[in-house]
Amino acid sequence: MTRVLLFTGKGGVGKTTTAAATAVRCADLGLRTVVLSTDPAHSLADALDVPLGPLAAPIATNLWGQQLDAQARLEEAWGEIQAWLLEVLAWAGVGGVEAEELTVLPGLDEVFALADIRHHATSQEWDVVVVDCAPTAETLRLLSLPDVLSWAMTRLFPVGRAVNRVVSPILAKVAHLPVAGDEVFAATQRFYDRLDGVRELLTDPAITSVRLVVNPERMVIAEARRTHTYLSLFGYRVDAVVANRLLPDEVVDPWFKAWKEAHAEHLVAIDEGFAPVPVLRSALAPEEPIGLDLLRGFGEALYGDLRPEGQLHDGEQFTIVPDGDDLVLRMPLPGATSDELDLGQLDDELLVQVGPYRRAMVLPDSLRRREVTAAKFDDGVLVVHFGPRGGR
Image 1 (tube, one colour):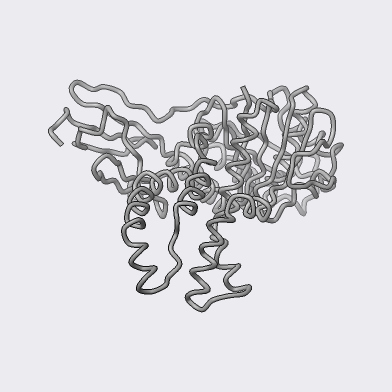
Image 2 (cartoon, helix red, strand yellow; image 1 turned 180 degrees about the vertical axis):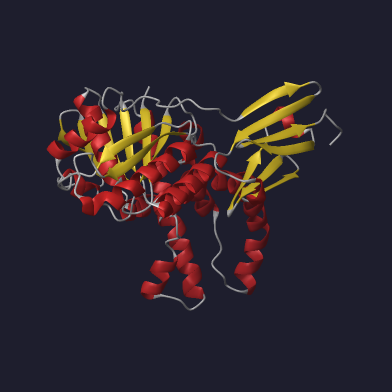
């Protein structure tokens, strides 16, 4: 079974270095490993000190690397849809470079990244897929895409296609507006099919783990804790936190005394704030860890005797358990508070919102004909009671 390891964190904390070092460590242990970047900034090649292209290419024994080329994927998968959008924009009087830019929708690079991760994880070519994700906000958008697109394709797409068949001939005659034909809808379906099974793959803790990289800084820790909560909302499992760039014990100069005391205080906050998730520690290196040799030392020090590809923490998952005539849904939301939590039910969906992130969770068959009778937030876990089956 292929393992998928996703690394994210606030920009500048060292997530690319940590991802690259993890990949080198896995390869040294004899695992066929591919490391790829979904970060548009693409600093993975710099960390490895080797050129990387849009396809997985060998770097060292058991190690391959890739930097996603969103433009190439765009031309391959978005061509028919883009052609229709260009016709619509031309009809509206927009052309040239402006039209080209407007037809490349925000978030397309994330879609292609998900498709690449899925391909690598299911190809049986690799033992480990290591992903250097974009900074946290972009990663959250990336990992929420399967939910959002699934909702749109199951609810809006069939309606849109049916309406299009009725309205298109009228629009074409009256307004001469270029209308989407079946080839555009077929291309949209193929585009969506690229993500088929991605959510199930990335939310299976036996396959995929997310690792958060932090520095001992108050704002970085706060953002990472929020990220942990939001990842849990969408069903992703954080199995480790990497506390990076800690001042080593060898530094005894009095000038660093206050800094070391602050690091010690922040480490306590990290241990307590992410408990029971394990916290791996990495000292501030005397030189930037660039290239395979320095990354190898980084990975050895970070993981020690641990298997880097292993599941480092097996916490509580989304569960449904019986309670008399009720069924009780339990969803871990570590770090969330009841003040930022909102809950609702609409037909066969449970609507859960934490802060700015909202998830429309399609309920399993066992809950669809039941109504929410009670809900509470108990020690980091959302507990929702569904009453006996009704006549809805």
